[in-house]
Image (cartoon, rainbow, N blue to C red):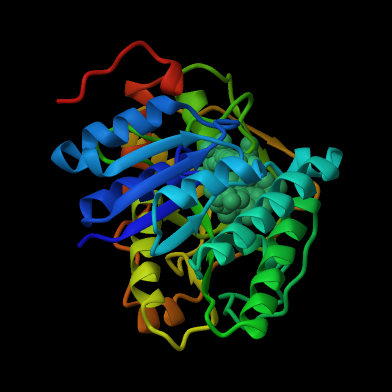
Length: 349
Ligand code: NAD
Ligand code: UD1
């Protein structure tokens, strides 16, 4: 019988791609999302992309902090595991509205964990972030590096990681995998689902994409005096479909009864500068991206990329796609959906 997985935040960018891979992998998925930063069109499109397996998806527009609504969902279905994506993720906003972030991300997680425990579902995969490495002293970042939070968003990730570690120490029935994502970019190769940020994008590739389709005049390059190959910041960009597959690998690992609380980096292990990424996108799209060089963005790190060894050995997972595929698929999504899910109807064929 296929396994039931609850996916919180499953209408969002990473969640929607993961739900699709789950369905294609034979799982049944129940999505809980308050649609605060997403659209139910993403759910409809995932269902269509999954074709006959789309019937294994159901969706509840529910806020995780709504304990009684969550309780009802757990009462209806016996879940084998939960993948917990739901959370707010804008770093700048978290600095200005820390209570919003602590309330949404921490309370939402605590209500989820309590409800899981009450229903005897103690298998969890949680979306952590490379942000917990702060400004790493060296690269690549291994999972044993010291952890630091540099803003309220990052602190919610660190707190939740600690909550999960404490929970596993307190009760050996819990199996939790913390996945530290590096920089997810790109979209499903169909161009039917992708990232659709509200307002002006903060992250590099959603901004580049908006320059390419004429919604923004130029990309501001934050800093050109870093000690890197071309002076711009270096990151580990990972294709969102590779990242989604990493969750399927983590779910398989959860069936190992001895894992307790484990952490894995999900990245490619390769560092790419802002200018290299822009050049790859220009090549993939045929569009010129005008650049304005400005000062460093406060709080930005110089170079971050992952050590991928632990995930390769223990999850048997490795990213398959490079920056060419990331940029190709990002452009495919952007050109077909210039206004994201609010674009005029797109037919899947
Ligand atoms: P996203 O905003 O697209 O998806 C998050 C989803 O959670 C949204 O659909 C939102 O509506 C939902 N949500 C938020 N609060 C909720 C609540 N209280 N109840 C129910 N639903 C709620 O973001 P994403 O990029 O898909 O990120 C998913 C997770 O991965 C987040 O936890 C994020 O912090 C983490 N992460 C993202 C990145 C990244 O660069 N995208 C990097 C590292 C970690
Ligand atoms: C962001 C988040 C971080 C999160 C990470 C993973 C911030 C401040 N940090 O960091 O918490 O863990 O994503 O998704 O949002 N850049 C430009 N111009 C732009 C935008 C970005 O030059 O308009 C540069 C940045 O300076 C950086 C690189 O592009 O060198 C990547 O930036 P971004 O996409 O925001 O990711 P992170 O900085 O890694």
